[in-house]
Length: 112
Length: 114
Image (tube, rainbow over all chains, first blue to last red; front, side, top):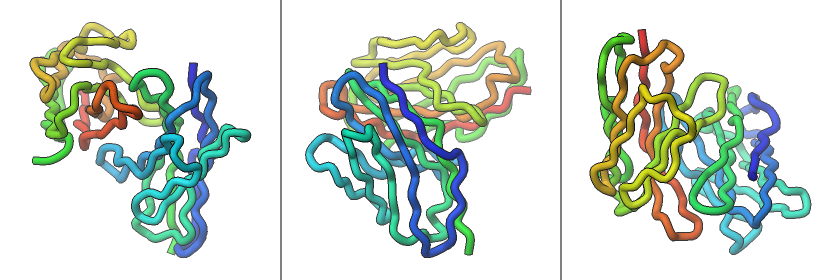
């Protein structure tokens, strides 16, 4: 069985500050890991994915995530927050097959 | 059209109505999914179709009836719903057999049951 924990359901950052969203997973097999972003009244958009090629993964909109096997983590970061980053972010793990298991989501508020 | 589209985007229905949600993917994928997203709950996988065959039904009540006539189209037929079924219903598609089978999502249908 696999599971995902996102620490903090809400994160507030100032514009220009570092964005750090935490994701820890459990999986019985080497996983694939994903971050999705959801803007209000929209579906989920793929930000980036880890597929075992490189531990540091770069995604769209300046986001990146680092896979740390020893910590079973896949935290998402962006050096400088922009107002347009206000959204909900979901971490997901995929082990066997194509089934995704999602975390509970982290809502990001960006303060001017 | 590109990606995954869903219609309608918003739907209000009474508990005795029958309605259908439609999803279409333009990505050439062979697997499609229905998810339910309720406020303050994690995303719930409802149904999975691979090559038009249903491969997963996560204990979804029978008032939700999926249909997959071909690998590009997926429907969710709704009848005698309850107010607690109000949610955002998301469709996704992926390529079964690829690693990873990245899922791409549609914009969702916001359903309100009165």
